[in-house]
Length: 186
Image 1 (cartoon, rainbow, N blue to C red):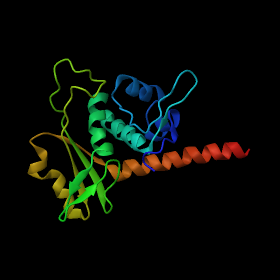
Image 2: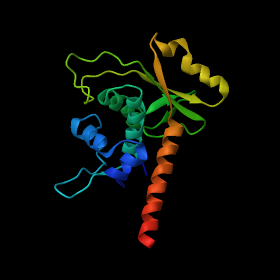
Image 3: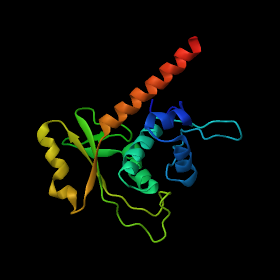
């Protein structure tokens, strides 16, 4: 379900809470890299079709941009959530990119923006560095892991509840599709 191209660009922007032209700009400038499963517009009059994985990336980027991250850095961090597997636990388990932990809350901790190469374009992911971690919160005591000294690296961090972001996107997308179906029935 994550890798099926199914969401038009305008619907993706609305569901993720970003302006349509902002999303187009992020794609054009390379801040948002499309997956091989996304279908870019092919000529005049055609439309992008994005996957749910990319839609979650857009929503994570939007969260980070709202806290002052440049789109390129936000895209790099969001890429860590949506495309990079994360191993955890004993015995070892894997949280696949774009998925939540199977139990509890998936908390994404993105540390203060790292050093970028000189003259790195703030709109593109190339040339930036980012440091982030995932925390699987199963019980209230697990929230302390977010603030553990091994995580802070003496830098500030933004904490994103991935469950909340994904639920908000899913609900918005369901509403958009419901409105479309309701409009077709009239």
